[in-house]
Structure formats: C-alpha cells, structure tokens
Image (cartoon, rainbow, N blue to C red; front, side):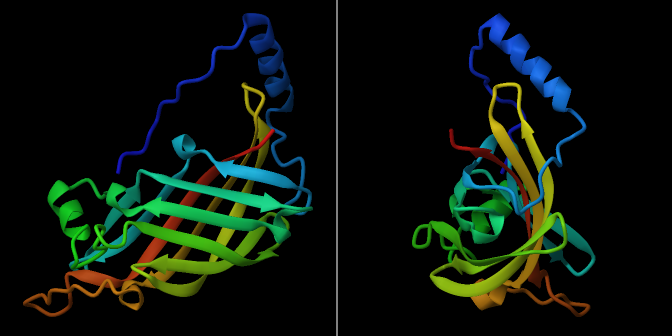
Amino acid sequence: MVEINARLEPDVPKEKSLRRNNAAAATKGNTMTKSVNDYAGTYNIDPTHTEIGFTARHAMVTKVRGNFAEFTGSASTKENLEDAAINVEIDVASIDTGNADRDGHLRTSDFFEVDKFPKITFNSTAVEANGEDGLKVTGDLTIKDVTKSVTIDFDFNGEVTDPWGMSRIGFEGATTINRKDFGLTWQTALDGGGVLVSEKITLNFDVSAVKEA
C-alpha cells in the first residue's frame, strides 16, 4: 500500500483563505487545548492523512512492514471520547508491503483469502481514559470471519482547526495480535531452526479524523 502524501484542497477565496490562515497561525503551538474528556460529535477518518499498517518478524532476524491503502472509519461521541462508538472497515485487497509477489501471496487462502473475506473490521465495545492524553480502546476485531476482543492503546495528539476551517484530531496507537488466532496459519520452517513469518503481528494506527460540521 502506498501512503498518500498529497491532497487536493478545495478552492477558497483569497480573503477567506487569509482569515483562516491567520486563525490557524494564532492557534499554532496550542493544539492540546482540551483533554480527551472534552470532545463531542462525529469524527470521520481522513484517509489522506491516516495510516493503518502492521509489522511482522521475517525469518527471525528482520521486520516486514505493510499498510492498507483503502479504509473507512468514524468515532461518534455524545459527550466525550470515553463514550465514543468507533468503527473501522479495511479493504484487505489494498494491502501493500512494497513487494508485489508477497502482496499477492497475502491475498490468497494461505493468509487473508480476500475473495472470500474482503474486509477487516473493528467495532469498539469500551473506551477508557488512560492518563491525561491517552485512551484504551477495546473492541471486536474481525479477520476472516473470526472475531476476537483486542485493546489498542492510543496517544492523543491534540486538536487543531486546519487552514480550511475543519476541526481535526489525531491519535497514534498500536496493539499486538497472534495471526493464527484469526486463521492466518501459513508457515515455513527455516533449515537452521525457527520460522519464516512470526505469529505475533503488531497493528499500527496513525489517525487523523475530521469533525462533521
């Protein structure tokens, strides 16, 4: 998967653009204006500025990193982030590890079997504050029709109003799963001992979400 580094911004009248830029400059350096308890509304993941990926140990001695290029998600809150309902859906066929042959193998029945199981989903069941600027998000992760409860530790990176007038929040988080728990069981033993692909996989989330008007 390829991280998208460019974004087509809407046309903004020059005068309006200057007002927004001045407002953004005035708040620069003060992104943590509220704690995680002070947010309410619906926030939609901005796929252009979000990365959902994973890390696996390869041949016992190095790491392979990959991403998913296509996904959607939102967090809806009544009063604050602790009552958020968080939902994420990932298009598994969009997997990208930087190697076409490996990506093709990951799409087969040895791993994700994308023709039969095209989506990975996550639906939160509980959200807890973790210090002043952190969250523990527990939810149901479904891969290949296998659902397991996982907890993701997130750091809250703050809130800003961007130059186009949108309220934007950011989070970074990670969790580790055993891929075999989700039916991803393919393996090859190494001649000198050990295996080709680790059972433990770290899922990484670098999220930018925009509040609905």
